[in-house]
Length: 71
Image (tube, rainbow, N blue to C red; front, side, top):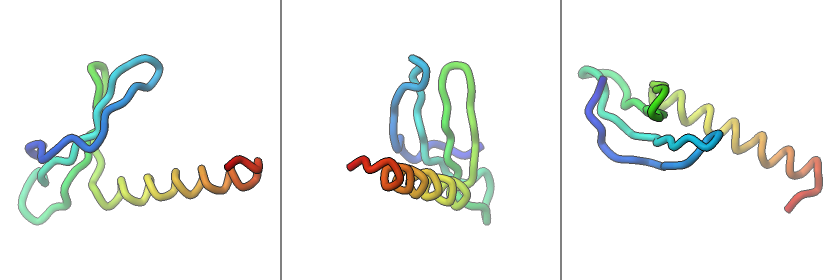
């Protein structure tokens, strides 16, 4: 597990506080990691995979708003 570089975001899901962190790679030659964590759970994902998922979610949001006619 890499050392924290910075906090990218904080928020709440189902009334629970969570944080999204950018972390140094666990070892040399690997990609940086993103940790999505709260008091009860922790999810680790490599930065390149996180970016793919994040862009997919943003695209899905845009498509849904277009379908529903929401600005």
